[in-house]
Amino acid sequence: MSTEETPVFQIQRVYLKDLSLEQPNSPAILLEQEQPSVDIQLGVQAATVAEGIFEVAVTATVQTKIQDKTVFLVEAKQAGIFEIRNVPEEQLGAIIGIACPQIVYPYLRGNVADTITRAGFPPVHLAEINFQAMYEQQQAAAAEAGNGSVQ
Image 1: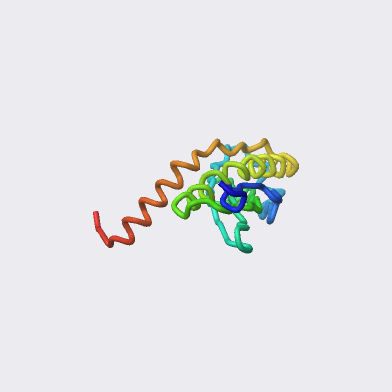
Image 2: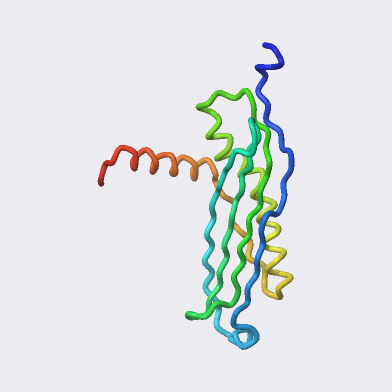
């Protein structure tokens, strides 16, 4: 096998692309004794930057509320730039949808927990994610939507 055909998978850089924290009802909400509800949303996005270079971003939105009032809202996007070359087309989606997010996600978890702690709240630790199961669900949903089948 020549070097031109050797598969390449390299991390070029991992970086915090976007981070925001809002406490719209402070300071009054901080005096509440009631436990807030926590809602966490996660997502994965990928884009081609150049030939064989991809940006993969994992996003998290963490919102806590007491009744209908927001205690805090954190939105974060952690991204990585990956060089992926000489990989069969049928494997590229899985690498971008599973391997890359698995590398980026621990950085996102740390940044979200750190931001919440620095804001003066007990840390919210994002759970471990099975990106393979997430990817397979997305693939199945896309296939079903493509077939136009109705359940």
